[in-house]
Amino acid sequence: MSYSKEITVSKSGVPKIALVALAAVFVFGLFVVGYDQGHLFSVVFGEQAFADLYIHELTHDMRHAAGFPCH
Amino acid sequence: MKTSLFIAIVLLSGFSAGVIHGLLNLFMVEPFLDTAIGIENKNMFATGEAADTPDFWVEYYSYRAWQKGGQILAGAILGTSVGSLFGVVLAYSRNVLPGNNFVKKTLALALIMWITVYVIPFVKYPANPPTVGDPETIVLRQTLYLAFIAISGFAAVGFYQLYKRIDKKLLAFIGYGAFMTAMFFVMPGNPDPITAPEDLISGFRISSVITVSVFWLAAGLILGVLWQKFNPDKIKQTTPQ
Picture: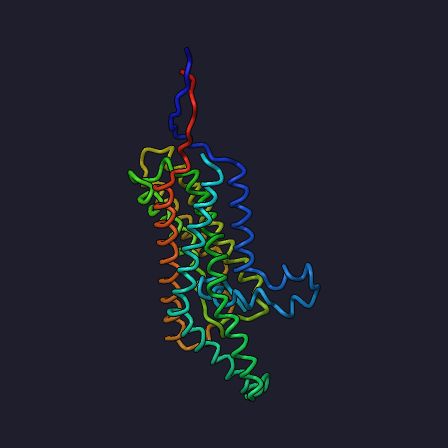
């Protein structure tokens, strides 16, 4: 007669999909808060986005407070 | 490793630490930003670039409300972003970090990353409030700051590889310190002159350092507690008997 047993094991490998997802979140978030000067919205609103600077204004205070260069 | 659990606790810890950072900024950094923007306004009135009219102040308070409200959202985005990098580095280093539990390990890593990707770049390119910073040099300043963070971060990884291979471990720390000192003098400085009052600049920088430091402490603590509680490394396996 055979039966199965459930055990808990520790696996220390790092899934590549997790690394790719987290790296993407890192790059996107850093760009939004620290670097966007209208670039993201320019995809939809064109050149006007560089004048409106909606994301820049939204992240303006955190940009200064976190140490990123600003205008 | 449970992939979805690992991603979830990394994002949650970064998000939470970011919200704490944003909330703290509202009390600690915003007063300095208001003072600095007040100086900007006076300069604009003096040069005729803007007029001191009721319409100006209506628009001013409208966009300042947008900017202040953005502290929380931007904190959440930045926290999730930096927390993701923290999670990636933790995933690769968790078996070699000092500490007999994950709270100690994540706090140790937070300390290392706080020094290498925040404190050292800050020493070279310290934070500035509004009124400091020429729009014409923004791309250069952003590039220099990001480059210095990358140089410091990758140098830390490189000298860690050396640390693993040599017996005299202290040499790796000395090597990193010497390399970053050289980079400090090689990299161009911030090209913009500081024209704002000294007490405003120093008060702003001290507040900025405190709140960013609290972010790193919170990020390390929260991820450590979550990892300790849920341990994404542990998976259940069914074995035939």
